[in-house]
Length: 104
DNA sequence: TGCTTGACTTACG
DNA sequence: CCGTAAGCCAAGC
Image (cartoon, rainbow, N blue to C red; front, top):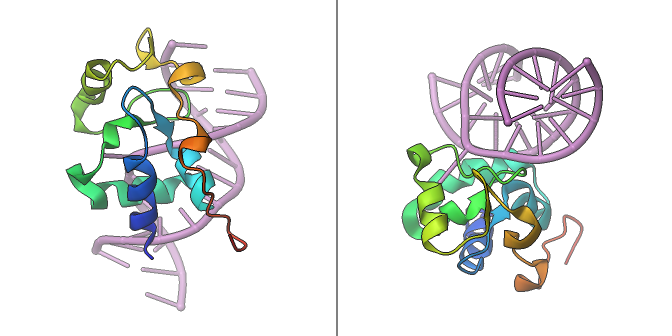
């Protein structure tokens, strides 16, 4: 099981109108936040990468600023220029399973 | 084998 | 809100 597969599963599990931060995915996978960012380009457009935002709610820095448009198109809760992490943040129950570093 | 870079995070000012 | 600094793990050279 590659890390990319786990990340792809989590990102794909993010419902429309919701978002998750790199740190959230990293925490679920038990890896560093940078690793999530490294596997993201590996996933390409096979997953809703735009639903993955920064810890402060800022959309992905890549794809030129196209992420906010995609998020807005899905009805994501925005607060000014950034996503409202208070409500838009995906429930961890949506994943249900947590890949802890020490066994499952 | 070792250094540099990065779709990151948190903390401080 | 923005800039800087330290910490983090993996890929690239």
